[in-house]
Image (cartoon, rainbow, N blue to C red; front, side, top):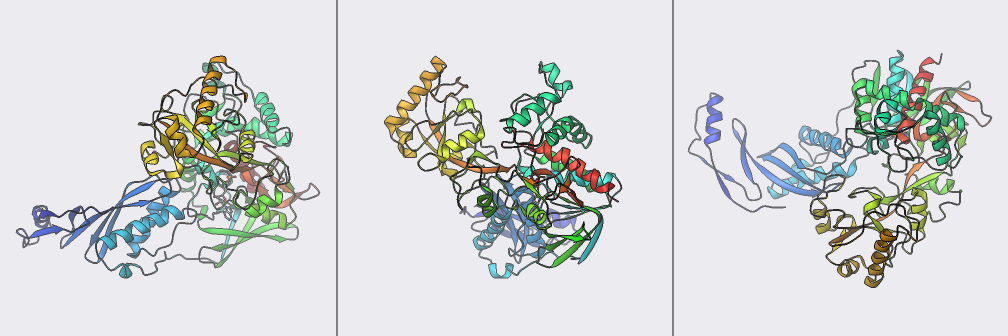
Length: 612
Ligand code: ADP
């Protein structure tokens, strides 16, 4: 966005600060012109004047507004004024890339691994500003790399592979047990998929449930988790999960994490025992761990470093081979044990297709998308398998029906209440109950003509004028730009035309849906029959099933020891979190993923640090 205007900036401010610098005022009568394209002229040091260029670029979650301050031969400052990047991921990348650009005086700096879209967006913003200022972009394009001392060999008592939820929980406990710890993390930030989760945690909790009149027990939690996973999970592991969830919650609180006092029933969680983090997404968990670990001299965290292979000696796992960002090799020696906490394999299409044998997802192909971050590629499962570990439930995969077509991630969604929406296929018809199980909805969408649906709202239920996306982008902005495919229409007819479905079908669909609210009977078995679709504007966004969680993985015992094909523990090797299998069975309950990372991450930290 290039604002064209000329303004005169009289050097009064300049003059005042020059006096403060004890310099002779030689410029007080000088006129300084704000350049075309810039919206402000400022003084950046005693002798220099800089222009502030406003730029708008597309980021990951929406348009980003950046102000770039440019002096004669220098990028003085970069200020991101408005962005919709993801908390803990893109937002962090913006800070890191900003620093790199300013330090290197170059737009040719390394992007942050795992947050390349946000990184690229900021680099583009600065480049655009340089162009707007008619400055020599070449001069600011020398390759700049952050100086790093890449040590070839490192050693610690416990090596943790993966700095997501489970890995960090393990690192906290192992270091509390006086073990030195190295965390190896592929991305340029900590948190993995856990930082992107909904921040929900299931645990029976009499202190908060009883005042709300909610009855619960670890036994009920156990039964629901096992049965909710179609009885496929390992009862022993489910028992450990459900019996230790409450203690895990108290432990998180002791690390400084704060939860809302009201207990809710998280989507797909089967009972009101869900604790909602006060901080956005999963940042509350990751911040609590980071705050604990950053003060410990015995803990070293290596970002942008990838574990590639386990080192085995005399039947024991004694270390890990890996690579730094520049491709150079590194060896991590583990005095006590190695913990694999690399998450699932949803972003590894080859693995997904190889293990998709359950018959539940016959439509998967190389275009299958995932809600996960890019680094979730089953590395830990591969590494464990290579040294003889057993895998379990690998065919069990969970889809969420809220992915962006072709991309899979879930940005750009507004109200998620099932009571406020209906799902429309390419014929303008409903085809499934909108308040049903995740797997049934996803299967039904796969069966539709184009494998996608429109998630539709009407203005009487969701106010188009005031609603924002989960990232905070105003819905009106999304609809105007058609970002993520958002469409609207004042009437059903206009709306139907805009989403390309037969208007007469859609009119009939809405009439039938509204009638089912009167009769409290729905042809698809929907139970949430509370809100009619009565008035426009109508609006909708296209969505597809997106691979969300892989329930299968490394077989472990209740102490998180990795088991071989004969069911015996592999000495020195532990695993926790989504990389493991046998806990969630055929269907993970909403709000149980983080419990898994906390409960089994803690056990892994304990087990590995006790290994002699
Ligand atoms: P969980 O919920 O099980 O903790 P997460 O997705 O939160 O899983 O975290 C897994 C982390 O492991 C991610 O941050 C991911 O980038 C990291 N990771 C995956 N593969 C590797 C690897 N080969 N080396 C280092 N880190 C890895």
